[in-house]
Image (cartoon, rainbow, N blue to C red; front, side, top):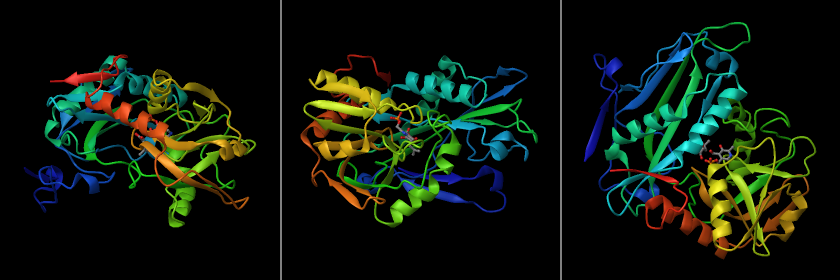
Length: 358
Ligand code: PLP
Ligand code: COI
């Protein structure tokens, strides 16, 4: 099947077309990037209340040039995935958690909370209306779902908007780090922070990502997949890695940083449960940077990254490196396989993480 997309707004001038094939797609090479699907779902907030969900086929939004999202970063987003099962059913992973986290982000930057049920309804609608874009079972690719909530009302003083827009769009993606489940390299640099100690690091808001662009570019230009951030106050403890949480494994224990300035990862939360089920101890606590020396396996985890094992961490300031082997470790492999099996519907879902769409 080949999809041809027309930007309706400009269709009289020129047919701007984006094409990609869902059939005969080389799913290993698809990567993590924007691709247009058929529909997005929208909902507006006006006069103190959220309206009804609407379907839209345009990739564009028309908004006021003084919208608070444009000037003062009043915007939050989410990321979740849907997977095609062997049984031909689509499974959405833990959307209730994303709904709750978006509410927390809204609280953090004074936007109105979108009700959890409305969020879930919108996710389901976006997936159902774009079913043809869910990559096939066993391809290693999935449907990435991107909810976005932005201040659209005009303000020129620094204050919250009176009007908001919630949108969900979707696209087929491969793993965030091109290596997929192959070990990758991270870089520690003390001269960059992504979030302040009591700032917005625990919210999924655009400003954190803008703040990470310079360091991320530098790391990538030197051949690293991402930056491993240390805590901004003292630079003593591990925070998280670019767009993912961090974990280390040693002595049959899964250890992951506790910090007020990292995003509470839903993947990490799931892995902590799976780790316990596999018989590992789990510790969520401060992780001193020197402890890197002692881990048997380390990895980055997140919706987009899934689990990305790490083979080497280079500390740029101390000119020191930590090596973990060029193949994924046994615990990381077990964790990865179990998580993916639950997502695909190949393993039981004892905690009700998955919503099945027929
Ligand atoms: N940390 C950051 C900064 C992220 O952007 C993400 C991605 O969502 C994560 C961690 C992982 O969170 P989750 O597993 O909920 O996707
Ligand atoms: C995700 O894992 O869903 C993310 O949001 C990471 C991202 C910033 C691409």
